[in-house]
Amino acid sequence: MRTKSLKKNTINVVTLGCSKNVYDSEVLMGQLRANNKEVVHEEEGNVVVINTCGFIANAKEESVNTILDFVQKKEAGEVDKVFVTGCLSERYKPDLEKEIPNVDEYFGTSDLPNLLKALGADYKHELIGERLTTTPKNYAYLKIAEGCDRPCSFCAIPIMRGKHKSKPVEALVTESEKLAAKGVKELILIAQDLTYYGLDLYKKRNLAELLRALVKVEGIEWIRLHYAFPTGFPMDVLEIMNAEPKICNYIDIPLQHISDSILKSMRRGTTQAKTTRLLEDFRAAVPNMAIRTTLIVGYPGETEEDFETLKNWVTTMRFERLGCFTYSHEENTHAYNLEDDVPEEVKQQRANEIMEIQSQISWELNQAKIGKTFKCIIDRKEGNHFVGRTEFDSPDVDNEVLIDATKHYVKIGDFTNIKIIEASDFDLYGEPV
Image 1: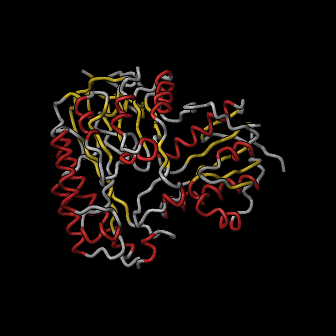
Image 2: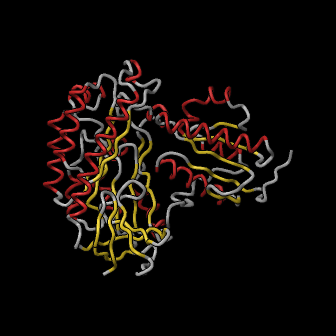
Image 3: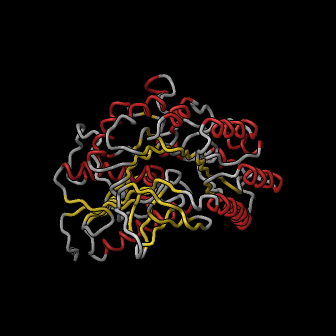
């Protein structure tokens, strides 16, 4: 049966998962556009490419459901072809081929040239930094490295993404200049582990050197750091963060847990004392830094005592931003050999308790912002509000600043000084000064 789709010869790229997948989809779309292909992002097209996530159970389920959904559309004649790429496909390709054979072809995370070939396009090596960005025009993700060398027991990322591989400083500067020329004002640096950056290429942790190069890019006003690993953190990064106004006083450092026995089993290479000291050093070096972290509850063997230790520590540390996940038992990881012995409802209860503590902390920290003025970037308009962010907030995961659009006008994509007039636990309300 032929497709009923109105958009003929149009490739629809559907992105699931994290910001690293968003980046990969944008690179794919840039390559397709350079091959004169008609390409859209999560709109209608007769050829569909699904960029999947395979990180934890929920993400895998969403990816499988999305594949099944498009296979159904293919069977109904609404699309011609369905291709699958990304982490889930890298990790479970033989199983997927057997279980969902109606997909035209499956590709892994490093199969871009082959995927392009299947789409009737050539991989163009000269396209350094050419991407079709899908984020609001004022910010973009900048992936500075691929893969991970860390041995964390719970994580399947090295299986899906391979060993750590840094991109050269020069290539990242070129990419940033191209983004700035398109109107991007904020770069969000991403990698599986930012702190490892440069060890493979330059034989030293080179994140500070990269930051010194990126702050010189004209048009870029904010540079934000995501996904730093606590062990071996290069402290010279804090010096440049403090000295250079373009680098946001913000860091995303997933700490996962704090009980020493759980940290040891997780193979995190650190202890409660070392982690606490590191965070104290952060705050001493950059006094008004916003620290974002993520935690895992319900890891195998996590006792009530371990959980109490974690709760007390979260209460004491007063993180500006925090997210909490329930442990997902992943095949081929080191922790898969352990018994997944914390019941699902206990995991969920523990996650809720952590987020209740964090909600109160966030509310208190936000109350202290009332009456103060912050430089905000305006991302979008939603209903009766313009939605912006301070330098202490990353898109999609952190607090937002809401400005009443029935009373005030601010330009989307611009920086504006906003005075905070009201605050809830995870949102700020303000007016332009």
